[in-house]
Image (cartoon, rainbow, N blue to C red; front, side):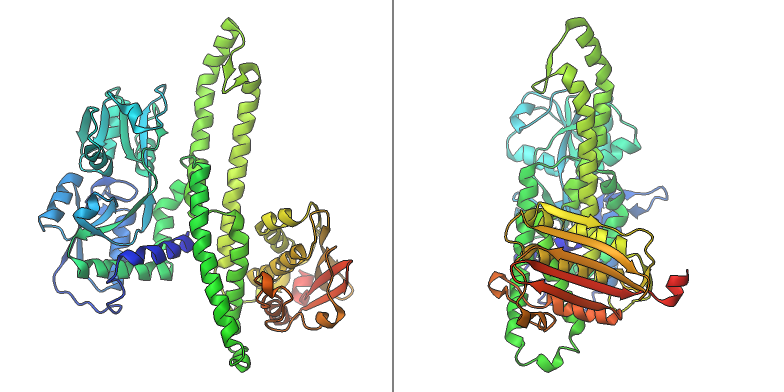
Length: 563
């Protein structure tokens, strides 16, 4: 998620030309800045039980005020009134508003600090909505001056609109049996539905795509917008924004929500890969240009090279993973149990219909078959989605920069299994013949699991890239040499092999035989230094046309061994 916000900022800052024209902490404004928002839009912004403003937007605003040395007062209230107060100058900033072309005629927006989706809710049993034309003639509940209301007015909707002050009011009205549909933001809608126990309403459609959500000021207020945009940039780069995001939105995302379409996931993957791979290309070119004049400084720049190699590896790994993938996967994780519960609620009715009327078709399949298959399908989907979430978490841990500390007790099997999981797509792409053998009852070694994981990933990726086709195999195993008190990770590939003259140069910085394919020659050099820091050894045996064996040996300390 943090990588996503960095990428999103690179794109969004193009539309905020004054953002970095002002130095950090340069503003010392004596006036109090009035920041406003919706009083009932949880978990983004709301009035808590103590009568105080609270939520993700509110905590983010206070953090921005702190780093930018601004004095702000946050006032939450009726959304329509707060928009009017911004336009008449009574309020200076709205802390959470969805961006749209129509709104950009009146407001200027900061780079987004979140992505929101609008959903159409209805009572159980009503048909699914796939497009706005399906709402023709239906009574629709929307928040007054909300993004859905703005859109429907802009499109000249002929359906009767029932205007309410809050999302909670819209969903309560719908759940009471009045009107046909309600259009509300997805996460607040699910949050309110859960808190109010509105079990008879469900989301049945998404009228908009993903919408950028951030701060807004009146057009012309560039200086104030620049302060909030710069403060937001500081929070994102220091990781503080991510911590606030995880605190308020993480629990809802971990519970899961809506099922994203394959097209949306593909679009997000494309954006993320373009940003990451573009950065990697620029960084690699800079390294190539500097190598001749900075050879003597390589030792001093070791930590930067480690991080650069980690980012290169990360660029390869994310080829099969989406950005903002936390959002679509979270939507899946929350909605799949809802779908399963829905099926369980109607299963008795379907079974009774089957007993009375005989066989009928559901989703193109006979009911007698579907009633057996559907629960299994839902369980498989839930398990698969959880596995994707685990891979994303592993990628986030792998890319986190944690230098220096090497005194943890580390389980080699855990490190190897995490590395294998991270490069699972690469392994499957290059070979159909993979054997993995974990030795049992291995002692631990003292070191840094993240850095050894980086070494193992480099060795696995190199082995995969050496294979001529998918019929060639890879063998991975762990073992313990009790006599020498050494833990060992061994990987053997049946690839092209390495020339004898090149074996001794594998650890040289910038030496690579794959420069035309984008290799930097840093992976094994950095790996060798990491292993040396752990007082271990990295050795290679290879025969041309037969394959290569790489062995990582790590010492078991006496204290660890006696444990």
